[in-house]
Length: 622
Image (cartoon, rainbow, N blue to C red; front, side, top):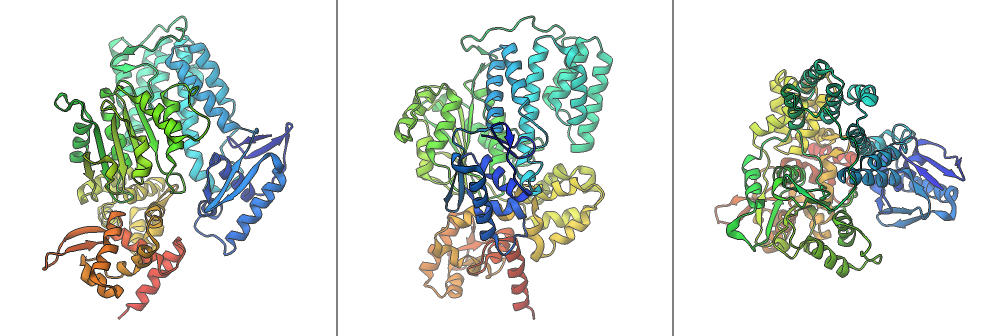
């Protein structure tokens, strides 16, 4: 049996297409496939099927779709009910996405080994797995959530395949293809560099120069940024006559790993792409870079850095940006692992360890059984003595993080999490706060385009105020403004001004303030969850434990325990002290709206958020 998602979602048995009816059924199948045998929650399935307007019969309809799939796919495929959702195992069946990723990885490794013929063959094989727009016959909600990352993976694989062709001297054969790709991906600077190189090798220097200036104008108009380092370096080499005019005549066979220019060939490079328009956080960034850089005076002491803060403050963006800045200090490579699953639950350390070990070398000696102790031993053996940077993103606690820490001082570890973690005791800790208004406006301008923001200064100021310094909210609003060139920012600013609709508006594609806060809320004890909305009703000003105790009808010491639990979960801030010297607590404005949207016993969806806030307004109306 074959499954396909790199185009219309399809199932084929013995070469014949299996009939599936309706976008909803295709969506459930595709969602289960891309989850790769991990649990996909009912809530996420609901979002991928109906967006923010689910029917009242959600559970029944989900059950019906899964039952239909089980009947159609038969015994070869296992779909299990695993609370809070479903997981699917495809057994011996194939998935085009798995084949694409396997071939693309092999092609990248061959490219690093300078075996260009093999690289080109593997990368071309990977690209043949594509059959159109991913999830073309599924819902738009699934396509918006999953297609962008797959499209990005295809574009990167194209770049690698073209690099192999250029290394083999095929510049004349691929110039036409590259011209079309630049038109398709005008903001991808590497493809533009490759076309400039091909034109230069073909004796068309003037066309290559024109191509650079056109790209510079496009980047300025679309993103408000200058060309990146690679594009500028290609242009300088073109002007200086040093751009590689003569390709290699033969592939260099793969051999032992060599170190050149401070970097190990074939070293893992798992960091996510850097944020092109990263804005603000200069003091925090400087502190991170200082803490990660090798220091002769602290030889023998582990370098561990922790970035903390509430959801949406940009911990991951800051950590990845700092990691890219510090890459030169880590010639043995960079590892990255997201410790949170797509549904917000913590990933088990054994799954994370397998991914890291796969990047560190052959898997021949890695046990098939889920033996965590053995995996930890191998992981620490392979990281021992190496100048590695290990980024562990979205850590949830000591039990998850402990097995992922190396036991020698040479690798540096950068961890992000919502609260302080005892496992990284002694680490440099950077606690993020909301952005200042000036930095918020700069981030909004970078995301929306400077001209759009400058044309509506009043609306921009209102948007900054309503986003309350939360980078995620600012980037969402900026993205929405940029995507609607014929709509003024004033209209969106007006919709954000209403607390009833504010959280609903802070949503764009897979970015969503409401959803980003849900994992923190779900991780709370039931007792703490139950008082969360009532505490938010105390208002937007700082309040002491005594006020919370009066509101909840509890002793002050018990109320303070609940408040501290919320502070530990980064859902509440400690803000100064009252006249008795007792700590005061403060809700971030958007966290407070989120808390009010929940209500006692409510399902945390957007419709509930709007209704709860509306009812609260009516109750408090003079």
